[in-house]
Image 1: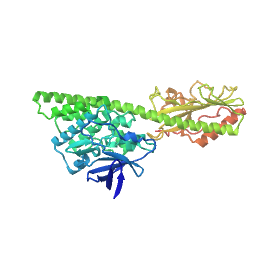
Image 2: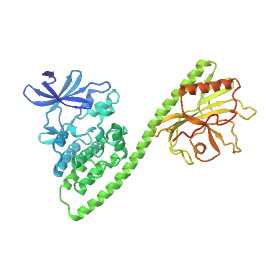
Image 3: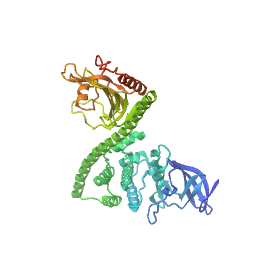
Image 4: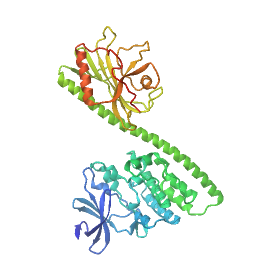
Length: 484
């Protein structure tokens, strides 16, 4: 048996549990005190102090009775609890309504004790322990510590997907409302035997917590059902406080008169309406967040493609002059009388088309423009659009290259042939199923970096030697309707 010398001397027994961020072992000291020791791996970027918080005077909290370091891990010694709430739930196939409400009441009271002092951040049945005849909260600081580590993918260790509030998935600052939401999931599970969201994957849980309403429970009084629904609101500010919950749970224990029950039914109806409004607001906000993440990824990728093109041109033609004075505020490369401009990456508006839109979404846009002195045929170069979109498979975003032309039936003409267009009415008409004044001159095709560099370097070489001319026919190659 291993002996650990902390402030006290502890005899470490077999492992009895593990979580996403640590292992739990039996322990006892020389006087026979039964305890457990949790070993939390030391991790770069996470200070030991994150594991501890001063909760003196707070009731229903499992205390840390000793601490130190064992075998390169932080050691937290706690009293040995009778069981966890998870143990109770697995042992009792169905708890009585009274028992379920009592457990929720005790947890709400514990959260009330710490409100304004600390946020648990990872409340779940495994962290709720039966100690000295009452349900208590354990494992404060583990989530904070996990989030601070520099290990990859620590998000999965810093929160437990079935119980994580929407704001946790959005990476927002954790507040007491996170714990209320987790308790709402626990209450739902205690009352119905099932969780409101079932995943099963990490990504499934994210989608459900952010965008899907929890089912309405069908057990308990109207007041209890309304309270659980409010705890699971998507918006943190709409959830009740722990102390408000405790007061309402106490009132719910008392039998109501017919008149009060009728008022509770009205309240439950209003809660359902608000829950749907919060779900829609959360979905809209989450869509905006996802769009921002996609834009950041797309912008970084396009900047890489642009730099590779610049490097290739600079290696092949050291006399080329770089600048930042393009007509579209882009990066330029001048070679003889030709100028190549790489337009900056811009975020595309959510609904840019002003015409019947294509079915795919464009997140970011750029362009590449090759200019030459205007010739006697009123030609001064060509330009292509670059869009970061899910043109070929829904939800799969990639850079595509395309270009446009004026319909031969139109009397209009352009000096750029073919020409680029931002997502808007001209591009929408070209992508439309019907006949319009604009058409595709270059197919929508995935941007292949090697082919992209070779093609534009070749055109720049022709332009610098005065040999770039308008295509003799357009489209220059087939333009299949291969987008979704």
